[in-house]
Image (cartoon, rainbow, N blue to C red; front, side, top):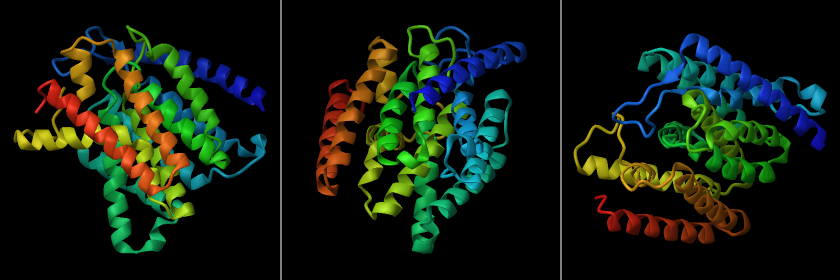
Length: 309
């Protein structure tokens, strides 16, 4: 089995190196701004490796000896990855992005069976899934956070859903981490990486919830959820436009104003999620809720200590 993962690692290295050539040729570069946490121009869109690698697994399912990754799921990944990469490369109309996101989420709801639970559940699912995808994208703001946090989340899902063959997505994340988890990143994930990852993760968590009839699995994204929701609430309190770029997430404050290394901050978030995920996987909903509550209290205490209100 390990042989296939090693081959996939080599393919991943080849894909990302080829992408670097393309990105340099066409100037797909993230230039620093007053909202950025980096100070030098850096290649953007390295996360294209995630959807490409995972779609390759789905398309070549016959070779790998399984066909659990459906054509429709691959299509959903393709649609949301394509529109996200387009957004990385050029200015894109929000209406087009919203339409494609809704179409991809509709595929997710159909493929996971959520549609069987009625209109209200479907509507709530659309709101939560699109919110989660955008939150995952917003949290992609410093070196290492998407790679390390995703290793924890996707690693948990690999254990819980072996039929989804997420080990190959893990390989893609590891390859990306080689170029991103460092003081000066060679490349950033870009929307194509963070949004595609979020979509795959949302699909798998939805599948788990439907299969097990348990909602505790939503806490597999608990730490990102805490930072995203609390930050939005604070911004609303200050009457800020929550749709505009900002640097008020706790992770951004720690990396920028407090001067902590990006990798250290990313590790803190990842370890916190790993601890929460252990409780979620081994315990019941009550245990998961208590663990989530403890994480929330600690998060709020840190924000208040730093004067981020």
